[in-house]
Length: 421
Ligand code: GLU
Image 1 (cartoon, protein in one colour):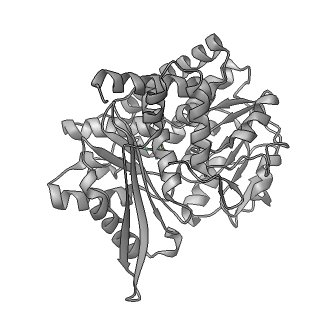
Image 2: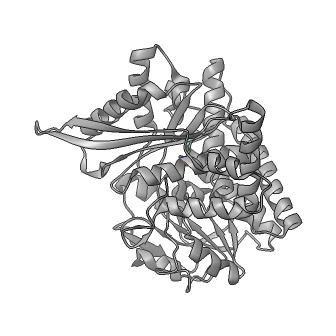
């Protein structure tokens, strides 16, 4: 079951989770068999996804769904469409979802799905056919009380609408089978911005605790997708100075602070930061060279590594908006430099908490408004944040180990109570 050490130039994303998991296991009171059980995924499937392309040819893609742990509730996690997706990545991300829902104490387990594809190369009808075929093939193991997908890298509300429709064809009207849907189809107002809003909220709590004045704080954000762009928007609204942002092409830099509302509008109109000319343009990797108070990786796993950038990063705090953005060796270097790291399962949990609210509303055929959504989301996140800080202080451990330990103990407790063995 062990992940390969490497993928391309860097460490494999599942290896990152495996190492972090194992390091934390050493400090928890759980037994060797519980440890083995928790690391092992409950069930995984690999499916063939044949798609009729617009030119008449059939292309075959590969899709995955990994269900990591369902002891605490139906398994939950996003679906990503990306050329680098493989089984190990999906497996690692599924484990992270179990930890995230465990840490936040919401009644879900963890899962993740993905298709190895570059969606930018597909037309909209091709993307729809791919999504529907993938849903048919993994549909057997989905269900509102079994496994509930949601958006992740390169998937959005429209993709969720197709998953909902395809599943409902076979099972009757079932909005609760997927979250992150468009609002007219049972999506929850607030869900789309929930991850970014949660990242900004956790940033504000952590900044206060660690002596950083958020108003005027210099922040760099790597990635301008759903999470990065919304994080930028909310932090800008809180008075922070966003000095650098990046997308897949380039980085934008302004030491005086970027005009985020203008860039947000530009990006959503043009689908790229390319061509925006009211800021200095840098190579996208040079974002990590910008000196900041807070650095927020909001793109893919392994973005911060010893080989690429950990040695020259100059910041006081890193907030992991992406899943697994820091490799374990980079983390050691950063912690030695006394940089505070707020781990992914805490920082970006707003998304899955929002999904929980959407699911609850779908099951009840009921609607809450946005304010109620965010109020409840922040209450859950604050509780999780405090628990992580308290345990870290009590045990003198870093924040990731603290977050993992809380989550792992909850999972083990549920397994024990259910009598899983
Ligand atoms: N993809 C998001 C994450 O990694 C959200 C998952 C969900 O809402 O189920 O947390």
